[in-house]
Length: 118
Length: 110
Image 1 (cartoon, chains in turn red, yellow):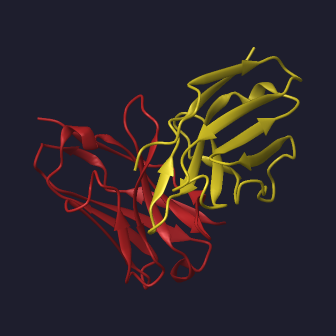
Image 2 (cartoon, rainbow over the protein chains, first blue to last red):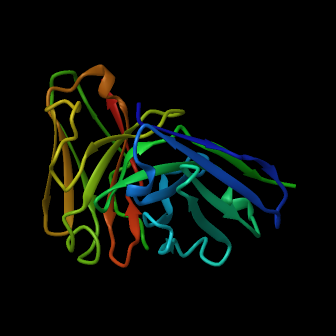
């Protein structure tokens, strides 16, 4: 079964850091671009970041560029999102999703919740 | 990276058809045929419903269809069913390896 499982969410103070993980199974992880998408409380889905299949190319939404770092370990079939300098507005459910030829998200995880609050 | 414009809500009765619009610009929706649609029930993973503007992944009912004209993409659900009630989001490739979502549309089946 093709599956993505996020972990690493939690409560963090403003200015703090957190690293999210997304474990992939059921497909050849190293063949696919991957994305992070978030949904704030009562808000819509927002694209956060993308990484290509070998990890050599990354892109970010303006709102997180310079603070978040996307990476992957193809040997461990795992995608990461290092989140630094966290702000209250980063509070959201964070989803990882698999890319399908420039169509974001043919497979999604169930999400992990990040709360930024003092 | 401005969000695509979707109506906040639409509604219809069982058996009716509804259409959800998704308006962007020539830099996203109008510039690429990489528009996708997702069905999202709160607390669950979004479900991939349409890709490449009008293609359906295997397992998605053919009462869902997609189209595009200029800078506006549309999702049509024909023969509404109670289980279609959900939030729906469009997403478009926006060039330079960036993507943009619509604000989401809440579908109510009356």
